[in-house]
Image 1 (cartoon, one colour):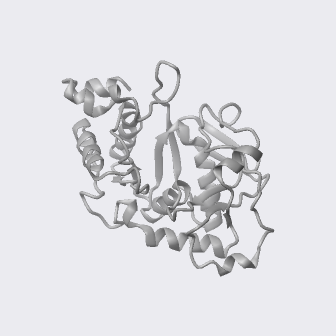
Image 2: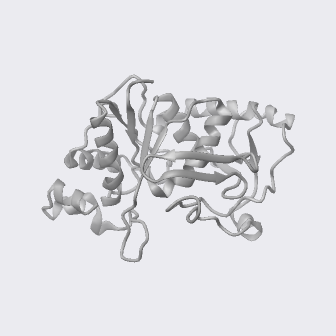
Length: 288
């Protein structure tokens, strides 16, 4: 692949804030400077939290900041649809591939059960990177079947169980990050078997983002440093599917006064709020 293809992937579950600008602006600049293509993907997978009016607001706020994309829900493009809620058939196809390869299995553990039996959470900070937020405790393998169980091939669909990816215990996942440099994680130590499909029949983040980045031919993923550990998980999915992984560039996070990353509950730093206060795009980007 010679053409640079980057992406920004906001979720319409709340108003965008300056933390989003901190990652979306570099993604736009890197695509622009490479004379490449920037894709906007609407990550509206969660049917309970995603709202159409918030999707409209995020497009408005990004355009107001001066971020421009060549492909997206409003711009069209070769690799659409660009809203994840419209890509279910694609995710099912990838899920089936993983089942056929023995890479995933159904898990019936409840969240409460996992909290009682799982090991201490691994946050991903420390030796492996500057920041890295895990998705919960290290899964102890309660529902993990023996390798290559033929029973999984009888599954007709993912509904009714939390499907997990079987990590190859002890396998090193190393990659070069464009900002933070060399990163190294060990499967089964820094993270365990992780969810790829939810019990309520919704694809999980890790499967959806890998499936979409591959299908949309993304050459570099630019996002926040809180997803460094997710990158290790996603690289294992790429390997299991036999797909080449993109390059990676993780941006430092915008932190609040307590040293925690900004969340959508920080309404005072929402781009929409700052716009209404009369701030300019340059002033908002300066807060990043």
